[in-house]
Image (cartoon, rainbow, N blue to C red; front, side, top):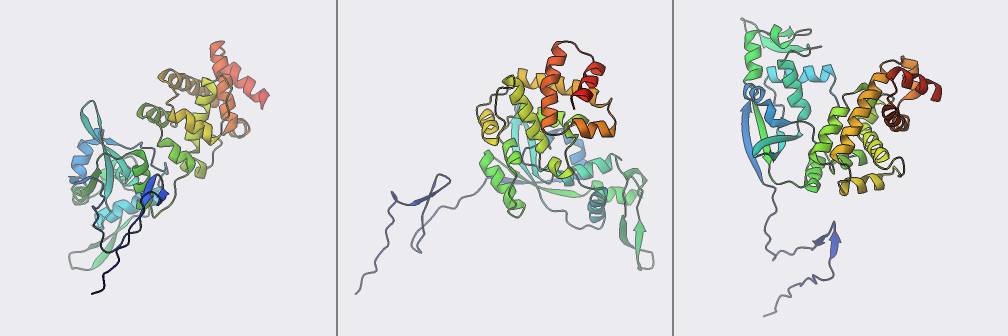
Length: 327
């Protein structure tokens, strides 16, 4: 009887990918399956609204895009027509023993529902299919209506919607980025978006707060904002302030600062004060002057010089005059 040769694998000379050994399997091999720990949770919109404090929407993995009113309205119409809005995926994180749901995929859906129930926007081009008393299909025009304006049965349908939530445990940043990329059809994250994944919680929160200032987004295109270029601008400003303008501002240098957790609470608080001051300056400018003076490296320069102006107790008006002359 002929013996079957069994192929052996030289584990010392196998290919490596991302630091992990790569082995070509055979039919005879027996493997333990890899899985990412996950639990399922169902929660109504009403429960979600009562527990908003446990949901976090500022994870660095998010693309920072903003839905149009048309897209928000279509989601609400889908809910009213009982069309699935898909799964919500979160990462379980804990602060001071309290459990939070860090939203990884589904931020726009959740915030759209939250803001509509809070009457923060009215629907546009919103037509919902229904049947009249004779069983004939009709379209109800909800355009211009806030949540409070909807028929009670429509309000109830929204608040009773069951959200399908998947909570992932013990995710490191690399696995989180990989999952997000798979959920979004393999679309790669931009370097600035990946860089946010290196930030600690305090820095991440500070960046999110600073983005609310108009001066931070001034001079950036919508595409640049959606790709988190404003986040990179703030990181570069931190680096300039920390080193008194003695640093390069390339991606490698920024990554090194983040890997070393170089930005302290003192650095972050200094940036907050300067941006608040500069935002007051920004309010004094007209549209033409804004385009001339703000955006990307111009704003980084202004943040650095504003730090000196604050040390000299210069007024907002004096610094605004200087900016106009400088540019």
